Each structure stands twice: as C-alpha cells, then as structure tokens.
Image (cartoon, rainbow, N blue to C red; front, side, top):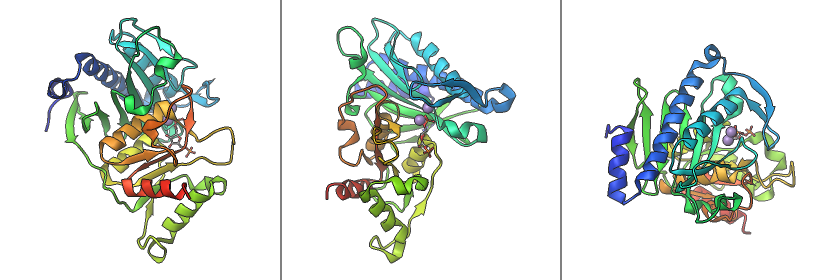
Length: 325
Ligand code: AHG
Ligand code: MN
Ligand code: MN
C-alpha cells in the first residue's frame, strides 16, 4: 500500500497495458503540483498571496497564485515531449507545445481562488486527452469527457494529496515530508446513498424549479418525503468538495441559475466538470448537468460553462429525474 508514485505508475501501466507516455504526463503534473504546493504552503512568507492585478479570458480577477500555478504547469508540460498541447482556464486559447506529442492536457491551475487568502483548501484539476491525428487546433481539444485518458486533482489542504485515474479506478497519494507522493488509498468507492449535500444556498432565489424542490425536500429532513436528516457543507473549492464526496459520499450541485441567462452554469466543462466527473464515475458515483451524463456532453468551446450535479449515484439520479418531469 505504500508504493511511491513512480513504482505505482510503472506497475499500473504494465498491468493495464497503458503507454509509458501517459505515465510521464502524470509525473510531470505531479512534479509541477509539488512546486505549487510549496508556494501555497509559503503563503505570506513567499509573497504569493493577494491579487495579481489582472483578469483572465473569463473576466475573473486573477490572484497571484492563479498566475504562478498556471506558469509552473505550462513550463513543466511544455518540456514533456509526450504533450502536444495544453489548454488552461487562465489562457485565452490553447498552447501548442511538442509536435510529436501524443497527449493534450487541460487544467484549472488553481481551483478555489477565493480561498487562497484565507488559508482554506484549494486545488489543481487536470484532464488528459489523446491528440487526434492532424494539425493541432481548438477542435482537437473538444472531445467528450468519456474520451479522457486520465484525469485528477491535487488538493492543497491539511495534507497535499494527488488523486487520479487512468481509467482503471481511482488512486490517492499523500505528499510526504521528502516531497514524494506515496500511495495511501486504492480504489475508493462513493456510497450510492448519502445524507450530505453541497450547494451555494445564497443563490437559491435564482435556481430553476427542480433544484428548488430538491433542496426544499432535503431541508425538510426526517419530517419530509426523504425521511432522514441531511447535513450541508460548502467549501467553495470544488476540489475539496469532490474529495469529501470521494471519502464519505454526498452530492454537489452548482446548478444553472437565472443570474446570467447566457451562462448555462458557473463551472467549466473542460477544466472542472469533466475531469472531476471521471473521478466520480470511476469511484462508482454519477455526474450530469441535470439533463445529460456529464461525460457524454459534446463540447463546443474550450471555456464552456455547464451546470454540475455529481456524487452519490442515487441522489444524482433523483435530481436528474426531477428535471425530466
Ligand atoms: P476557480 O477558483 O477556479 O474560479 O473555481 C471556483 C469554483 C469552484 O471551485 C467552486 O465550487 C465555486 O467556484 C465556488 O463558487 P461560489 O463563489 O459561487 O461559491
Ligand atoms: Mn475552478
Ligand atoms: Mn481556477
């Protein structure tokens, strides 16, 4: 159980007949995230807190750590000859790296930016796709989530954890004192039922009717139709919410709402919803946009936004059914 990341990857690749280049991409991501972890832990002492004074393509204010994490990942991935190109939440368009590369990497360099300056868990999310044949263009990246060769996240919390799947279950690694990732949990499973939900309740008045109904039912607890009491959590770092759900079940919602009718949701399909949905499915959970299985959605843009419902299968299926009636 205490395999180091290199030992685990070597064995996992050979057991499942996966290419060595895929392992090398995970190694590169792990190394870059170890550097990000070091910067996060330095905090004010490293001068990394606060705003960068810039905005990204999505009109969001960038924090210094958003910019730094983005740079560290791009520099590391560009040096890996297995990586043909990358796309980042913080970049306007994709970046071509190595012409001969077999893979494309998409990432949210720093998830939970609003938590950086208050010392609450944040993360990095990544998605790995095979590069289609031919010249690299935006289309090359617009593959449905089920095509992902790998996905995962690094959680910078009380411990730094690396969690990923190469399509054969989920594995959890903990960064040790020598800055090495060590396997600490294999094949976690998300219980089909749960009694914990995560949603930003401050948006309640903007939700559509099915989500309103669902949350009313959960809040009624043992006195309502669900017949049991529910607990609520909202960290505002999706990585932290997904990790909690991976460890003890639950359901996470960031639904479509009426604040901006042009936005089908807040979260990004390519950098957040798809990679985390693959993790959730690989652990026996479910993920959808309230209408369609997340991993079946045909992407139309790199920075596309989407509604998200994920976690314990029976809760996600129930929310899906509420949207069909
Ligand atoms: P990012 O920091 O990459 O922009 O993502 C933040 C996301 C997600 O992690 C979290 O679930 C959600 O935004 C929080 O939204 P609210 O601020 O509306 O709570
Ligand atoms: Mn994010
Ligand atoms: Mn981000």
